Image (cartoon, rainbow, N blue to C red; front, side, top):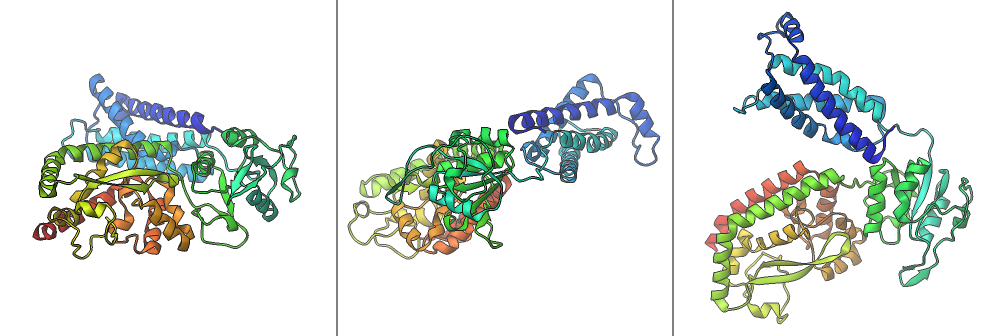
Length: 477
C-alpha cells in the first residue's frame, strides 16, 4: 500500500516503464511475424521498427499514455475491481489517441500490429501494477476531529458514534464572534475515547501535523470543526484529507459556508467539495498564463487605441480600479478601462455598479458605450490573471461591501470563495449577475463541483462566442 508521493512516483514510473516495455516487446520480429498469422487482425504485414523509429515511437507513446492515465496518479483508496476498470478505461483512451495521431499527417504513426499488441499487454500489465500499489479502503473506521472551534468540536463529539482517536488543533485561544474561547487542553495518551467531553480526547498535534497524524494512525474519517470555514486553514485540512483518501464530515449546525451533500439525516453531513490536485492546479495555471499573455499580446494594438481615445475624450484617467473579494475572502485590486465620466468615480450622484450594463446611463462616456457591450473594458483584468489574483474561469469577484450585504440574506454566499475568482464563469455565460444572488450562487457552486480543465475550456469557448455575437450591437451603439 503506497501513500502520497510514494504512490505518485510508483504510479508514474510504473506506467512509463510498462508502456515502454510493451512497445519494445511487441516490436520483436518473432512476435510480429506470429501475429501476422492471425486471420484478419494480423493484416497488414508485420512492421518491425528500426532503432531510430522505435525510440521516437516509444517516446510519443509514453507522452500520450501518461496524459491519458493522469487521474490514476492521484492517491485514492480504491477497491480491486474499481482500480482494474478505471485503468483499462484509461489504457483504451490512450490507444485511441495514438491511433488518431496517424490520421493527422503527424510524423509518427504506430503500426497497427504494434498498437493492437501493446494495447493487449497494457490492459493486463497496467491494471495489475495499479492494484499492487493502490491504497485499500479500510474496513474499520478510525476518525479524528480537526478544527479550531472547541464548541463545534464538542458538538461533533456528541453527535458521532465513530471511534474517535483524538483531535488535531493548535493549542491556543480563539476569537469567535468577538468572544475568546479557550482551546482544548492538551492530553497525553492515545486511547479511544467514548465520552462526550472534549478534554477526554488526546491532542494529536497542530494543524501543520495533520498529514503525519493521518498517516501514522491510518485515519479514514476526519470531522472538521472550524470557526471560519472559508479560510485557508479549513481548505488546507480538506486538501490534506482528500490527498490521503480520508472522508470528511462536518456538523450540520456549522456547515453554512461549506459545500455539503444535500442528502440524509443526522447531525453529521459529508463535505461535497473535491479540492484540485496539484497536477490540476499546474494545468489550470499554465492555461491562465498562456491565455492571458497571448490575449494581451494580440490585443495590444486595440488596447493602445482604447487608451488614446479615453484620454482624448475627457482627459481623465485611462483605468478604473476597485477592490474585489478574492479566494478565501481576501481582497485584491481589479482594473478595467474607464467607461464612465471622471466625476462618477468620485462618488457623486447615484452609485451604479460598474458591472451593470443595462439601460442608458448618462455617466457613461461615448467610448464607454462601445466598451461595455463588447466587454473590451475587461481587457486589463488579464493582468490580474498573470499576477495570479484571478483565473480565466471562476466565480466573478464582487466588491467586499456587496459581499457583506448579500451575505446578510444569503449565509451560503461564502461558498463561492473556495476557488479563485475568474474573468468569466458558469454564472456569466448563463446571464446570472449579483442582482440575482441565489441564481448566481447556484451556478458558482455547480462550477466548483464540476470544475476541470476541459470544463473551463468549454466555458471560455462559449464566452468568446457570446462576445463575438455582442460586437455588432456594441458598434451600433
